[in-house]
Length: 481
Image 1: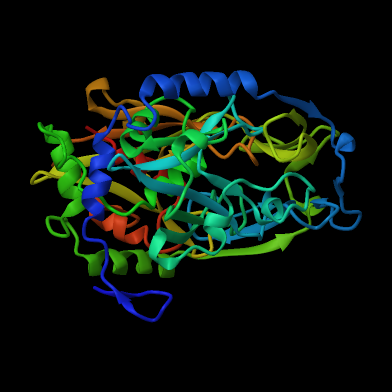
Image 2: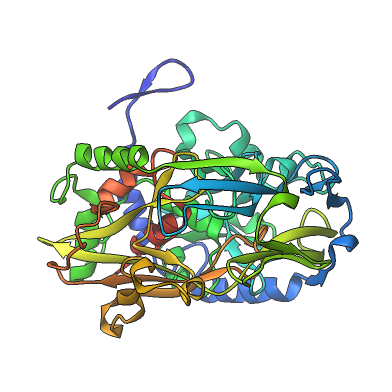
């Protein structure tokens, strides 16, 4: 199908792109930046970045404060984000009414990866970036990762490098551009613009600032297997990359890689048609009731505010804390801010099975209060097990016990991956892809369906279909070999 360009002329799509992406995915030791150089780069950036984060009391926050009327925690500029209250009524799950703190950040930020061919292989320009909430030091991040408040320099800091490539790109250079949601339990209707732009002109790769390097898709797939190394923002943008012919460039393709390739490239061979999938999603959005209304933070029930944190009276879920940050690796060298601190490590797992040689993944139409469209497709299991210690067995998340009891030989992917460190403090989950037999049942649950990677790729071209945790696992799934 032809598409319009900015000149009003018609341009044929790049039919070579899937092969270019596959060639990049096969280059697991890089071209512009060999793996040994990548390892040394990350080590050097960790040594170079001074990043001190100290817990403080709310009274020590600068330019942040509690509104005298609502009790909401906001920045004096009215920008960045605020911590507010939310009242929730739903027909879904064992608890149908509650209130909670939630981050309200109505601005749409930019998460962008710049790509270009180097010696005939497509590379992604990645950044070694430190965030106040990271569990470790720097993590591999997109070329640009910035809220609107940041890139319009409300903080008075330095400009964001390479931002101009994403503000008003030539349409012919755009490989992906889609609004995607973030965590619906912690953010209220938060969205970011996920972009992949091919650089028409760019300085030689040797002229990069120290925090930036060109990496292939194959290198990024390998880095995803390391704990807390590729950050959440990079993972979500990588999931929006157009479909490549995964596995087709290798001389000897494993059965697993072939199953992933067939799942990605073939519109046929799926258990459900495209129309059936869209109808299922629509039925879940229509069936489930979720009513949310803003609530003054001071009126949130069952949450307790102390001088140093806001937390649930049972010690579950998460807390709101305050931190003081000093760094030499950001646009601003010193600031204070609130962060969400989760209680316990999460478990995020995707069950997959092969049906006639085509890999299928079991997705959950999940309800979260911060979603714009009631439900989004989530991994098979997405929860913090510590929150269910006192929960009756019938009310535990479906398939959780199976995931916790899986055998080692079923695990195709396993890594601890961090959530976004700019808003969350030491938030991480054990991300897993677990293979089950072809006859594994889905228990006939209306909120679960087996989808191919091709169907997920199609949904990822649009907003509000696939949640951020599932997008992370899709990025990991594409790298299975």
